[in-house]
Length: 191
Ligand code: B4P
Image (tube, rainbow, N blue to C red; front, side, top):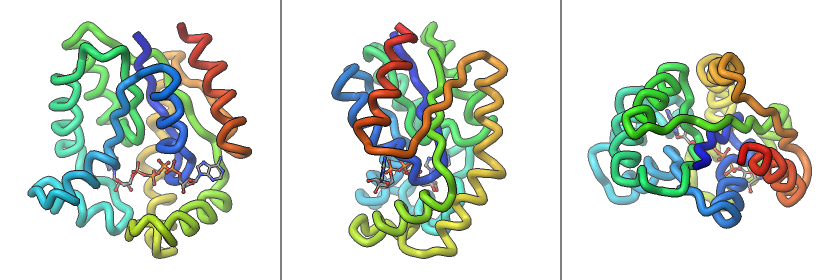
């Protein structure tokens, strides 16, 4: 069973590459950003709560994210494996993920970290903002805040997996297909 954390700054290509990984490896895609946007679209209380944080480019509080992921894993733990996209985003979330997987006798196989410099992230997010309707992609101040939040709160998650010898760096610049080739090479090595 492959349980992969796909990691990287906002706009690094986590969602884009997750789609290809799901097609090739049949893993269950668990994107916390997508789950929040689904709740938002359905107008649930959770969606309303998440919106206030997401619109500003801030992280949704750990307790809320962890509960949402825990509920999802509990119903899907018989899957071939998981691709965690955009989760964990804090060290607290990483610890919680290990604990929830352990309850089902599972563990993280590895973290793939997409490396993309900030100048390229800004271009991609602004470009997506033209068509995505996502408020967090449409405003330079919010984009800057997301990059800052990533550097301050999310980057330390990479060290958490480095200490477990589960960290793999992937160059996230180039064509989507060429980056996917690099990802497949690493995923096949995990098997
Ligand atoms: P997410 O939905 O996770 O979004 P993201 O980080 O902005 O995007 P991603 O990296 O997936 O980029 P994509 O592939 O689409 O988070 C949104 C918000 O939700 C967060 O800011 C936060 O508020 C909240 N949230 C989510 N999870 C949370 C958690 N665990 N804890 C707390 N809060 C949480 O790529 C971006 C663009 O680049 C696309 O337009 C794509 O087409 C393009 N692109 C991709 N690869 C490319 C390439 N190789 N070359 C050129 N362009 C490329």
